[in-house]
Each structure stands twice: as C-alpha cells, then as structure tokens.
Image 1 (cartoon, rainbow, N blue to C red):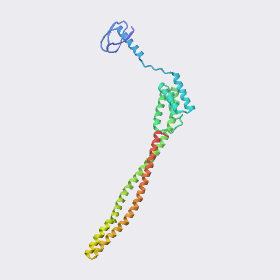
Image 2: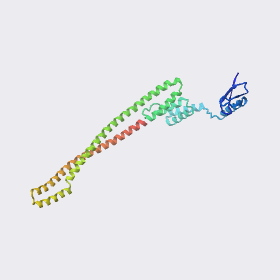
Image 3: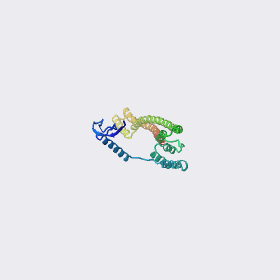
Image 4: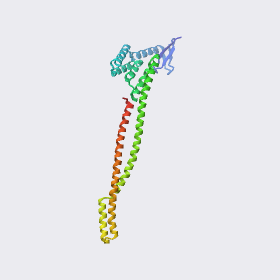
Length: 283
C-alpha cells in the first residue's frame, strides 16, 4: 500500500501513513489527526514556501556578455579597472563560472606580466585562483594549476629576494646600534673627565686658591709653605686647562661620530620601511 506524507498541526513533524488510513496519531507528539486534514495542511505549507521562495535566475546571456566585455577591456583596450569590474560582477552573478575568478587573477597580474606584487596582493590572488580551480571543469584544472603555480613561484622568488635584502639591512642596523651604544658610554666617560679638568682650571677655583695662598704667605712671611700654596693652585689650573683641552677635542671627535651613527640609523630605517612597503604592497 502506498504511503502518504503530511505535516502535524501541533508539532510540525512530518507524518507518513497508509493511504487507506483515515485517522492516526503523530509519532512525535501523539496528537490524534484526520488523514485529510494532515494532507491539506502539508500541501498548503509547501505551496506557501514555494510562493515565498527567493528564487534568482541567472541570465546566461548577461554573464556571457560581461565576460566578453571583460576580455575586450583586458586584452584589447588594456583598461584593467574596467576588466576587473566586469569579472567581479561575473563572480557575484555566477560564482560557479571559473572564468570570472580566473579573469580577476589575469587582470590583477596584467595577464601574468606583473611579477613584483606584494604579499597582500598575492594572498588575494591566491584566493581567486583557488576559487577558479574549485569550480573549473576537470579538463581545465590542470592547465590553470600549472599557469598559477609558475606565476606564484616567480612572484615568491621576488618576495624572498626582498626579504633577504631586508634581513641584511636589519643585521647592519643591529651592528650600528651596538656601536652607537658603546660610543655613548665612551662619551659619558669622557664627559666626566672633561668636567673634572674644567673644575681644576675654573677661574673661581683659582681665585679662591690664590686668596688662601696670599693669606697663608702673609702669616708665614713667604715661607716655603706659603710659596707652595701659591704655586700649587697655579699648577692645578694649568693642569686643568691642558687636560680639558685634550678632553674637549676627544669629545668633539666622539660627538661627530655619534652624529654620523644617527644619520646612518635614520637612513637605514628609511630603507627598511621602503622594503617593508615593497614586500607588502609590491612595486
């Protein structure tokens, strides 16, 4: 005996019953039913779903026209922006058509002639290429895969070369920073030496020592001690003048070297930023 299907009025479960049955109960909620009511309810439900369904029909002629326009923009007119727009519309209207996805790959790579693309663009291209391979016919997949892999390897080599050059710049930067750090410590030490000698030769110190020496000489009537107290401050002042002069010349040399290091670091930072941009966004 054939089975009929219906929809339970209470719980919405699908009920299957013998065509000769007039009554029964829902196997899910045990609600009793009349077979005629269940069948009518099920047919009404299906009719409602069909009438309210969001059905989209793809016009193959429109898709084909957009593909033709995109091909014209890409290969003849060389308007890559227009070609991209057409291919994107195809992927939205007919995502199962591999020509739309593959067309985006061809457009962004300028028909595989642009190999200096950054990692950001390569990630997007990989997404498009993978979509094209998923929906492409079996007899097309091998050719698409070979073309994409060859292009991908060439672009990857470009990125790897840039990364290697950037790593060399990073190593150079680290060495310069270490040398600058060492130089900074030397400058700090030389500053202390310079300050010491500057104190020795300071006018105020010399005058103070001279006054004390004069008083002592007067007390001791120019005794040997008094003479020493006059000579010593003068000697200390001369010593400080010579020492500070030498220390100042050394400091000037070291400061020039420090300025040079700062300049090198600034230039290297600029180069590293440019390499980062080229690696990410290409040329």
